Amino acid sequence: MKGTIRAVARRVIPFRVRLELLRLRRLPRFLVERRTMARRRADEDEAAGFDYLLAAHTSPLERVPGALGTAIQDGKETNVTLAAGLLDGLVVGPNQIFSHHHSIGRTSRRRGFREGLELRNGESEASVGGGLCQVSNSFYWVALQAGMRIVERHRHGLDLFPDHERTVPFGCGATVVYNYADFRFENPLPLRVMLAARVEDGAFVSEIWAERDPGHRVEVEEVDHRFFRENGRWWRENRLRRRIKTPEGAVLLDQEAAHNRGQVMYEPDTTS
Amino acid sequence: MLRGIAKGALLGVFGWIPGGATAYQTLTRDWMGTQATHVDKLARVWPIYENVWSQEADLELEGLRVWVHGGGWTPFPFLANYLLTGDAGIVTNAEGHMLDRYLARAVNGVLECDLPSSSALDRRRPDIERLRWYGSVADAVADIGGELHEGVDAAAVPLESASVDLCHSGGTLEHVAPAELRGFLGEARRVLRPGGVMSHVFDHRDHLHHADPAWPYLAHLRLSPLAYRVLCGNPLLYHNRLLPSEVMSLFESAGFEKVAVRRMTLPDHTYVDSDEEVISAAPGIERPVLAGEFRQASDADLRTAAAHYVYRKRPAG
Image (cartoon, rainbow over all chains, first blue to last red; front, top):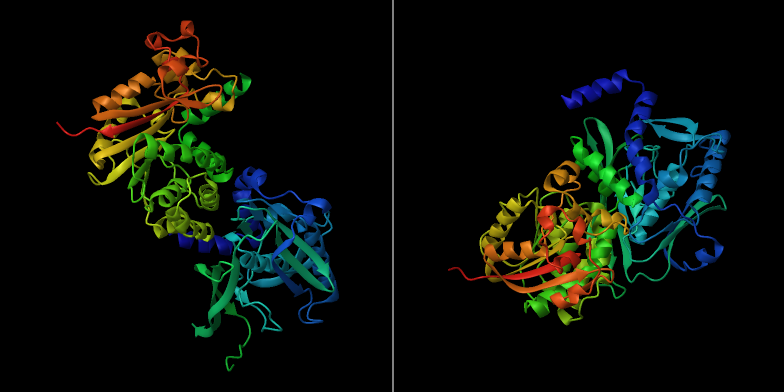
């Protein structure tokens, strides 16, 4: 019954209206929890105290040169640069939660954000703040490797393009839609960590630094990757396993960090 | 005093409207994360409990089966029990539910707890440490063999008879009405093994004192039963207002014998064992303003902010 009502609502209520209703539903909680989220940024002196790199990732801002129009690509680069400025130096205390939306806020032209490509309702379209998924995707991957505890993450439901110089496994993303689909992680360590973010040589650089060596090592591995057909459509699936080890190599924990599944929007090459 | 009045009014409003208590708990504990400070408090007091259990009650902690009633919103009791005894034990909650958001905080709190060093504890630390990455409290508790019961009626506890060595609570039983408390003590006697130990900390203070230190810590003893029921008889403000001597009588009539009663006095927050030491502390309220039913309270009772009651199950007959 509930499913039927939802299906009818999806057909009858326009996407933008549904989106605002979802935002409104999460708003009270969003406002109340704001004070507990990581929002303080370190100044230069304090940032120098975070000198142990837990994890880092660099991803090019333009994956396939010329694939997007110049205006859209420029807009995306502007958006990512602005977001990097808002995240750089953010301190996440022990047991504190980082929230993409609490840190970056709602994107608007007034705040300097521009139109970039965004995946909405299964279709790509230009919208203000588009392209910021690259920021949440990168920090999801970095947070996993830094040993953070992922407390909210929404994966992309579609695999839009064939792999092109892919450096991270399929599905290592975190889609974000202000404010109801957030990317959040908790710092489970008994020490503070700091986010560093910047745009450098046409790439987005994301890092998580700690005040000292936390005394464990993290490995993330993709397993059970496959393409498969179901109901006449191509799907892609994998699992990510995360191993937490002592510096000596003893495994403290071997856990499934994610199970990714997405509809493939291109004809996959399954010969390799 | 204004802070105390404001907090009392806030809790009064939430407490009296239907569903208000649940809404208040959701707002503060689920959304605002106020129980994080509770973990810090438990990390401070658990070494004191450990000392009382091993020294005053003469318990061998290794392998001890511990039941914590009113374990709260965090898995701290499970983790602390596992570290101390090798058995995560049992937690029963009458209200509230354990929240995933406090898991890593509880792990860090337990690992930073000032517990006595031993090879057994050191061996178990990595088992606790890895739990900070678990996705849910339920998985973490299951991993160390803990047993969680939520929504428990204190007077009908779903535990097997003679299955537990130690029953503990902290800051829980003062919120249980006397009749229900008698039922709980009867249940505890049933669940404890022969010679089992009761360890219960009652916070005798008017809880508005926590929000406003200027609020006299036994201010709730001013109110007559009727006035108290009208002003504070809701789930967020209710305190059974039992005096320490009344609590001791309840334990004894339920079939327990006294091992130790340690009273906490203010302003130093120190625990003392003898009534003579208690008398030198500051009173929580002046005797002339006491409501009629509390006029006969002893000087020691009027100077007890909290007390740790340690009793042993008396043999039957």
